[in-house]
Image (tube, one colour):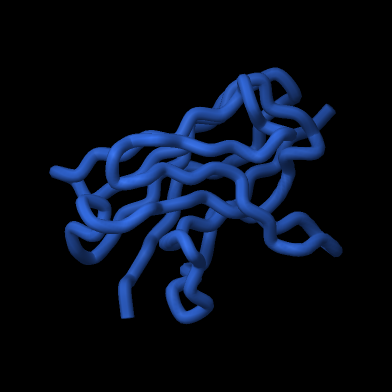
Length: 115
């Protein structure tokens, strides 16, 4: 099992920014596509952003132009810079491999955006 630990969430007002971090137990980023997912109350967990081993990125339509995913192989860490946050971004954010593996879900980090 790969241990993934998310951090950086918090409470912000609409228009604010947060930077999420995902630390892994080993250097998996050099050989695996990593991604951020989120799950809002009553909603299905959805893909937010992904980054391949070559640095290619993909974003959900709802966050394009506002969120940026990046990685630091030396630190075994994936980041999600979230700018211009909206109330609809409120959710628990998780990181995982792509394709996602259920056994790898961590606690996630809560992001709450007030209007």
